[in-house]
Image (tube, rainbow, N blue to C red; front, side, top):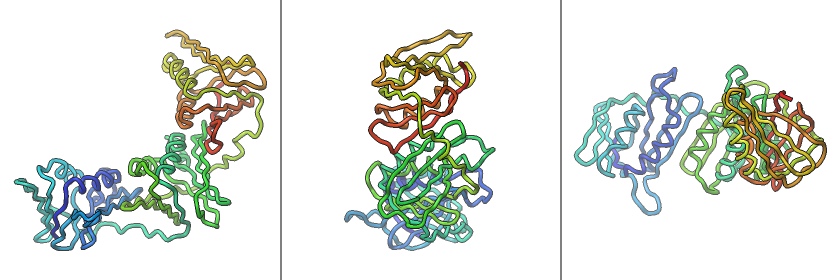
Length: 378
């Protein structure tokens, strides 16, 4: 195998691949990157068994020659070492050659590295994802969906199924739900050409966070292919595979109240900043609790009290308050996460009582819903 490649293009591909590399893997060869070269270009693959990322660098793009292939072939190189070498090479022209079996030579300018590779035949094959369920979403919408849901997955491994986000397709609508049993985040969207057969899968939150780092900030289409135990996200030059979580995801639809006794509409950014300030004194206390009260005079009081530190009270003017007077306590962190997901828009918060879950929605957009369980303090 021998080819010459532009260093910056190689680095771009490596930055995606390295997100799938872990030193804690059961199969030692997975600490390496598989590099395959043919006349079309270079394909690199990295995996930690849970996620697999495959990136393709074309030999030619927009009329510019990026790779010159002298001899086709493949090799597996230690990922961390190879990545560090490429980052620090002196020029933008890099030649990689495999000779005498697995001996790999990397040349750039007057630098030359010699690495011992591994047999590419020992590298696990890519998961076989058959097109059972396939649809597409724009990349920027995918990033929004991930940002608006993934923060609410459970960090505890005691119920592994809750560490993922459930993606459910029914009646041409995609519903993405995350919950850690104390809060819930839901995002609805209507993709073009949804599969006719309903589906429900749970994608690990960690996989979605890594995918989010790779997706471009544009409207480029991302193909989503869901199979038996895997999901595949395809962009123009990147394949991102993730295993799916097994188990029964709880029925969250019955958690969402259908009626309310108090409704408060307020500027989300103002409320977020007030809760952030109140939480400065609440952090030392158990669970970071902030109190919230509202009345018909359109005044919201945010307060927090820590016996050792002191107390804080702040008044905010609401846009509208309807229904019963309300006093409720909740985790400042959960409320701030929910408000960040709604992203500074005016929000409507609907309460059914001081100890019942309450929901937050954007005034302008019904597709995002956040639900939080209150804390008993009053």
